[in-house]
Length: 59
Image 1 (cartoon, rainbow, N blue to C red):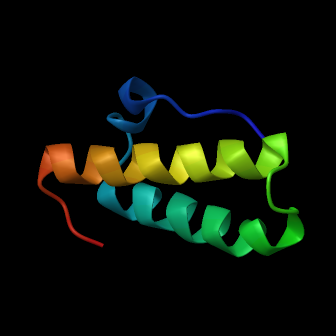
Image 2 (image 1 turned 45 degrees about the horizontal axis):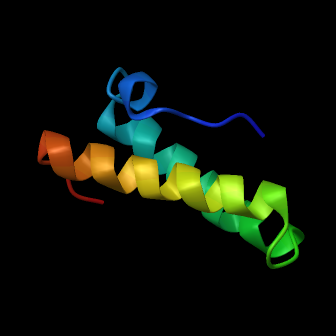
């Protein structure tokens, strides 16, 4: 699982951000709480939400 930076996410369209967010949320169930992979997924979701907010987009 690669970490997405806000700078990278700023280049994606709204639809791409929503699809990426949905995929990440779906994958959360596969990882146990507290694992490094799950924490990266949660960090990615947080970065997506920050990007959407910064750009004035809504889910």
